[in-house]
Image 1: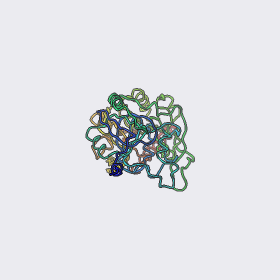
Image 2: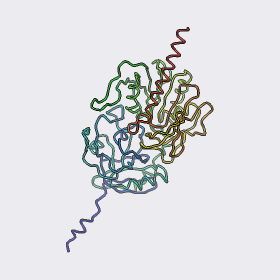
Image 3: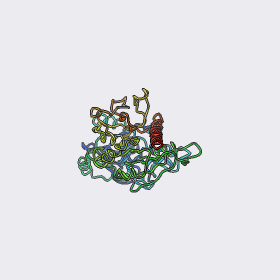
Image 4: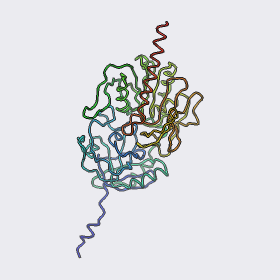
Length: 403
């Protein structure tokens, strides 16, 4: 008898491997760039917005496992990129998917995700039981891993195991330098509207300096949409250079890595700004930077928060919001000093998600209120920041009249 039935059941040769630090080897099919990538393996539960996630600088040094099985089905386009520098490489190291990428089925698509991953030098693996991998991360924490893609399936498995085992922990890593801007620039693009695309800032009411630890485009758009002329500065910009721009407020951006490591140079700058009683608003890493500057501590999380469906309680409004999150470190609420109030908390695990300085126009949140991707429940935080600047404007005007 011919062996046709055997051929029909033949296992396809693996063209990609995901090797975990404990020596586990997971086989699959490669996609994207034909290369090898290494980093911390995390999972993201968002069902939409994969392009925004893959271009979020906060994912620098990480490999993303998408729990949603059908990633790539709406293709990609240039409008949804979150990295400010369109030519910059993505911070994310690799991507892990369950189902093969299908042809794009969306009128906004300009490219297939596979070709886009190749162009951005992001390696991927598909055919993975991402539910089982996610359960493993939830139980054991985020492991280091190596993702290798070779169309011929030629791998030195033992070498990959040694490489994965030897990768450094995210603890102590400052990953901001590769993703921050190299020079100061201004931003005036506002949010996207159906059939009109992105808008342009008209006459601004406020001047905001945004410290770039890995900032996202939609954060800048929402600031511009709130009538703010935004100047973005590198992460290492001294306080005197920020103040020389005469800002009405300072924004501390999101970003990757261990906040304690970035804090070596960021915290002294924020402390100097706090002495000036200027309105400050921080998001994600900026939230952690503010916490450190106020005297709190940060800690590494077991599995982190990565997704667009996280419930958070806002104690200032007594409401529950569904928010977007992306972080592997958090402020230790037990370390919050006197005068610093906890404003938000995760309803998943109770971790801190927001702080404010009592009696001062200074606040920050751990989640991503710019909602790119994710729900827009927290857009009001940009209004709160503007209201703080408006209030300070009024006080300054009265003081000037009485001088």
